[in-house]
Length: 286
Image (tube, rainbow, N blue to C red; front, top):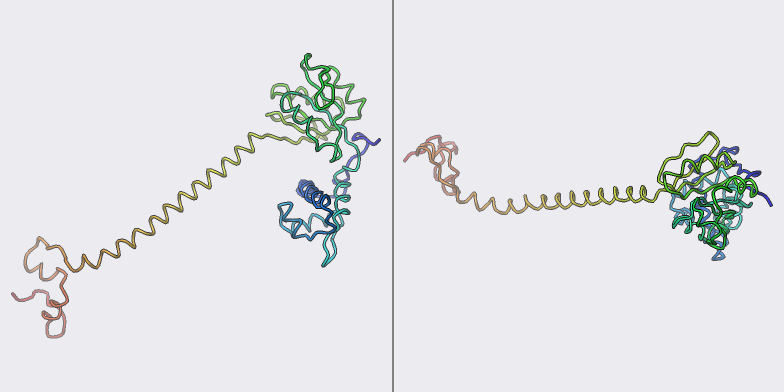
């Protein structure tokens, strides 16, 4: 049986961009769902919508795989499933060890999607001696003292760290020293690894904080829109009051001459008090 130690995916040698590699699992998930419904072909627009990307980006990504679809027909679903699975290295067996069998580690061990996606949980490892031998998801937990021999015996190249933050770096160093070259880190800390070791970090608290940022921004935008709408209605109310005020001006506290020259006039006053040329005189006769 092929193992992760001797077979590596060819994406880097083929020059596929990392951003495209990150989207391939999204396409594979959407295609797998179509395959389970016995859908034979799919258009780029339909597949892009299912994967949450735009169709132009999808077609560009598939061009790196040498897959261009058929005009008027679309892409063959089964062939694309095989093609992307092969590119991701999922057509072979990848033994995985999970280190740290607390609540999270046990949940990962019980996840049923590993086997169907090309991964086999080869061992569950924990530092607590009381955990040794206890079955989790049908697999007996082993002590961390056996970590190196477990990795060597099973040809493991992928490790999952689900330990507390304080233990993660030490576990990481032991995994790397034993031959693990890819690590999925669930511990809330940043791992330091040598060149040639890939680390993918999963931090649920960070993802929630990012969502909180977007929620706060949306709330601020809604408040600004409400304030703008409230401000837009104020001038409309004022404009309905102004004509009435113009008919009944308040009397000024200046001299009679100044009153006559500056006070607003009713329409009858303007007609009756015009000068020879139709202008209102500066000082009107008593």
